[in-house]
Amino acid sequence: MLDRGSPDRPSTASHCLADVERLLFVEAQHLDDKTWETWADLYLDDAHYWVPSWLDEYELVADPDTQVSYIYHTSRAQLRERIGRIQSRKSITALPLPRTLHVISNIVLTERDELSVDARSSWTTHVFDPRTRRQHLHFGTYEHRLVRNADSYRIARKKIVIMNDCIPTVVDFYSI
Amino acid sequence: MNIHHPRERLIDDRPSDKAFHVSRDAFTDPDVFELEMTRVFEATWSFVGLETQIPRPHDYITTFIGRQPVLLMRDGEGRIGCFLNTCRHRATMVCPFKRGRQKFHVCRYHGWAYDSAGRNTAVTDKADGQYPAGFDQADRNLLPVARLESYRGLIFASLSADVPSLYDYLDDARTFIDLVADQSPVGQLEFVPGDITYTFDANWKLQFENGLDYYHFNSTHSSYVDILAQRARSGDATGFTTELADEVEGQGSFNFRNGHAVNWSIKKQVRYGRALASDPAGLAEVRSRVGDIRLKWMLRQRNLTIFPNLQIIDISSAQLRTWRPLAVDKTEMTSHCLAPVGESAEARRFRIRAYEDFFNPSGLATSDDNVMYEFCQTGYAARAGHTLGHLRGLDRGQGTRGDHARELGIAPIDDAFGGSGFGGETNFHPGYREWRRLLEGGAMEAADA
Ligand code: FES
Ligand SMILES: [Fe+2]
Image (tube, rainbow over the protein chains, first blue to last red):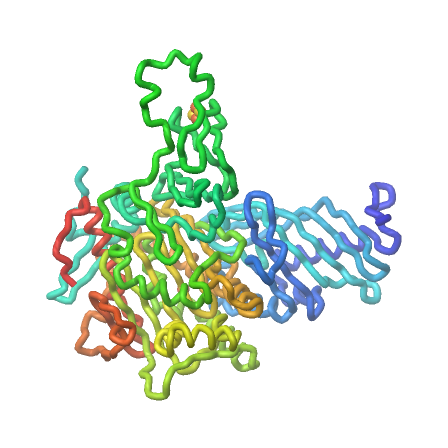
């Protein structure tokens, strides 16, 4: 039986909620602080980064090879490609860059083995665009697969579900 | 209702003077937008869906024509119908879902029922209703659209009966639909599952123009061009063409009747792969069926616009996108990854990855376009006189002509061809001419091309 933690004992047998939570919060801070190189360092070289689209009102895309996703990357190099495009300031989507604020909660752990743990959480990102003075909110769930390496975690997989999927103009790694 | 703007103010189109200007008001005036809804979107052919979206009896999807909700469905015999999605009792939207399969659609307000052929099959408590005489004879069925026709599985509907047949309406733009559909061994197109919907805060005609605009690529998409160059350096990209050594490289366009146009490019070296080329057996099968010339054209980048609401882009992947104008400065886009039915799993995987790479609000190129439309919308509010953005290609004396139309066996009403920096803008003209004709109430006038 998998240990999902509880308020008095917020851990699985091998993984401590506080450690996982710290990684998720640090990841969010790097995204908001635009320290994206460091953000990408949290990912393993062959990490999967997946933002599925919706098939209909209820069902998400399940197979990236036969269905369309917003983003489906299978290496950290692809994340770096996205980062480079924004940091070059040649992408008009970065003229100017929006300010973002990620908030993460409702973290539930599912232990896979001693070294690896899955974490599901809820997220919202507030996005403010100084060009248009528009603000909007993206929200959904994260599913992280974390792998412990020495005393820190790295991200082997991240699945981002966007619940409000009528996208205003642009969505990119920093706003989800 | 009279158009507030004299026609010379909305479009200044003087072919003999080599002049073509589109007024800023065309992008910013809410009165123009109202007329566009009633006289363009709700009065001519609109793309509404693919036959493969509703393959079985009783399958349906819902969408919009202009501002009007419609329900597209197959009846028990497999016939396709398209109906205004509004109850004949008191207007309620009959079907609130995006897609599904139902023999009957029951209005949730008072329970009137309709079958998948749109027939009213039940009026709740009719006998107790003390209806006036004649109620039984009244037409209570869902209201069908005025015209509904398909070409190569692409379904179009018109709310006005006063339109030519779809075949005639599409004119030789049909060939460019064929060039996509014939990539399938069974001649059919489908959407790869997964819905992408997004909005931008700008006029729909910015999308209409952009889909025909090669001029913007290197500047708007310079960050994407850098990525392509980087991938080419690291050997990640596999270009493939069947262009012969003596082919003249460049960019061209064909203009067709009724507002449609396509632009295309000829490159002997390509920095991105093609789904069609990623499967040698599939490619050989297509070649044996369509021949070398059509295959060559299938491998050329082609951006097709069917006026007023459809674009099909066939590059590394294929995209079919439609738009629904929500306001003079707000547009909703629906984007699909378009695919030939029956392609190999490997080609399909390539197609999906390439589609996600380029298109959509999350893609590395389209996201820049979307923001650019908003820059344009802000800029159009300036009362800075007419723009100079529809002129490239007007001086044909400088152009290079080719046999491009002849080898495809088509007769466009106009064409253009130039070097790799040409970025012609005359391919916007047929859309604007059709737009003006419809805004003026559809009166036919001599097309002055
Ligand atoms: S509005 Fe549909 S049954 Fe009354
Ligand atoms: Fe573009």
